Length: 308
Image (cartoon, rainbow, N blue to C red; front, top):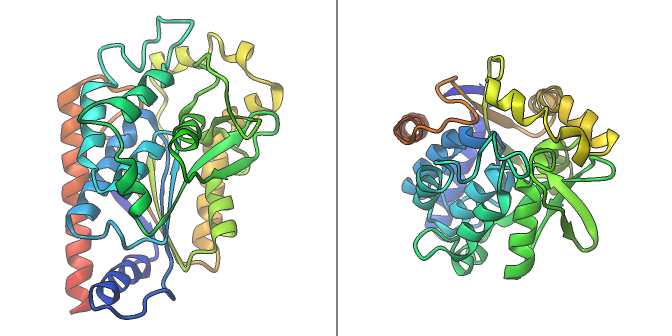
C-alpha cells in the first residue's frame, strides 16, 4: 500500500477511540472513512477494513462512505463483519458469477451480488449491526442524467439495498436501471465531480481517510476490461455519463489532489499494483487482502507507538 497525505488523520482517529473508550467527550473529532471503487481491487479496501475492525476502530468514524465496490465494504465494516467481504470476493465474484465479459447482455451482474448481500445465510450484511454503528453510512452514486454525485443515506432495509445497488451498478455493462426516490442512478465511480469532493464539502468531517481501491501508478487496463467498455457501452448511456466515465480517473485524481490541498486534513491510501480490477484467481485475491491487512496493522501500530 502507498500512503499519501496527512498522518494526523490516523492520529485523530486513534484519539477519538481513546476518548470513546474512556467515556470522555469526542464529538469534536468527526473522521470520515471513504472506500472507493475498483472492482476486484476492493481487495485492498477489504484488508483495510479487517485491520481497522481488528484494532477496534469500527465505531471510531463519524461518517462512512462507500462508492461502487467500496459500498459493500463500507457496509460490512459498519456492521463489524468485514470478513464477510472477503468471502464474497472469494466465492461470489468469481467463476463468471459477477464478471463475465462474454455474457454480453449482462457482463457485470450487479443484481446477483445484491441478492448475496441481502439474503445469503452467512454472507449477508447484518442490517441491525450496520444501523447500530454511530457513524452515518452513505453510498455514493452518480445521477444518470447529469453524472452529478449524490450521497444516498437509508434508514430501512429496502432503501438501503436499493441505494447500495445504485452505487455499484455499472450501467455501461449492466442492464439494470436503479431508481431511488424516482431518480435514476448509476455507479458512484462515474460521477463528475467525484463523490470524494461532495463527501468532504457536504459532511464537513474534521479529518478524511480515503481508501482508493486503485493503484497510484496508472497501468494499461487489461483486454477484458477494454472489452467491457466497448460492447454495450454506448447503448446504455447518455452522452454526459459517457463523458464522465471516460474521464473518471482524471476526475477522481483531481478530487483527491483538491482534498489533500484543502483545509480538511486528508490521508489517502493507494494500492501497489498487486491485483487487477477483474482478477479471477481466488488465491491472489486472498493474498492481496492479507497483504493489505498486514500493511494496515503496521501503519496503525506505528502511529499508536508514536502517541505513547
